[in-house]
Image (cartoon, rainbow, N blue to C red):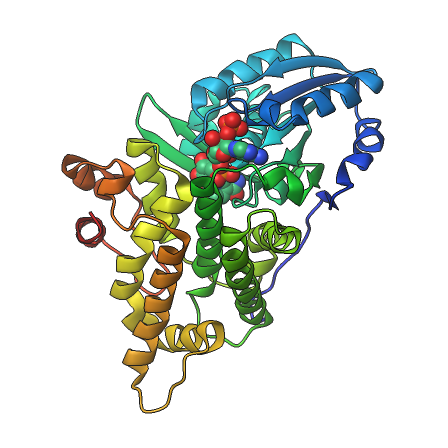
Length: 387
Ligand code: NZQ
Ligand code: ZN
């Protein structure tokens, strides 16, 4: 653990079938005005909306609702939420849904009382947080992003076709998050596998950087193995509680900062995918999977030891009679066949991209990377390869 770090994560997690029992006590810690934020209707279909409304009513809360938050939430919805917060003197923003709803809640939280245009301040200039932050909490229904226990807030500004992520400090993390794996049973398969690959990608982005021997990399390998095993069970039996609960916890651990401690990190696949999402609105994890394969095949040689380690420790590939190059490529091939097993499309075309978008996407991504800093031209080549 050669780089110094401070670890602090203030989110209280209530996990399991009875996690909702903790909601009244948690609500008692905040004032009476609650903004209830949710997506396009899933929580109504699974009966969760009625359950939450009932608890809020019993706790004497005044409820303001903002439903219809889009997957890949938009800045216009953030501004609408911020207005509702000001008009109703909201004390708590309760996000019930997936990463999009939680990300939107955090964005509303920091935007409601911002003294400048929030988009420019936080997602363009990346200025430090100041002003009043409205507390956020979450009830998670879709697994993948880790937003339930971190400061991430990824917002799409449709006016400028930019999808940008910002990681806010602990004041913006959810104060509490309720994680009941049973709420995820109804997630459509394509969203479930998108979430699974998102988790895998978060782990890869943190793993494929640096060469030092640190505990964090061993932790990442363990989470990857658990994720792979449970995902294989869950795609065949979506109501297997043990598998779904393992995946849920993998997601939280994979991006609550613990798997990134004392490490340099990559995040280039995410940078490219966010712009792909701005142009196509595709599910985040599917985009990550498509981009990952040509990306890792392009950069592995710059970090070959880590790719060999990945193949051996995560996929149990034998090194007998093989060169490092062959072992590293076998690990990437295993990752690719895992994605295929999940039923994830393998081309950008299938995700709604058109050829004319590729160059625009490539040149709107920031140049970066873990083992190799990519140029815009190299990003363009990678996009063409998976088109
Ligand atoms: O809109 P509703 O009706 O709620 O339906 C949603 C949505 O269509 C549905 N869904 C959620 N729970 C369900 C359900 N359907 C049936 N039953 C349930 N229990 O699933 C669809 C996708 O939901 P969404 O919240 O968009 O998915 P996800 O959790 O993957 O979030 C994606 C967003 O998070 C960002 C992504 O870029 C994307 O904008 N990310 C956030 C991160 C963070 N905060 O740290 C990091 C990630 O890398 C990521 O960038
Ligand atoms: Zn992600």
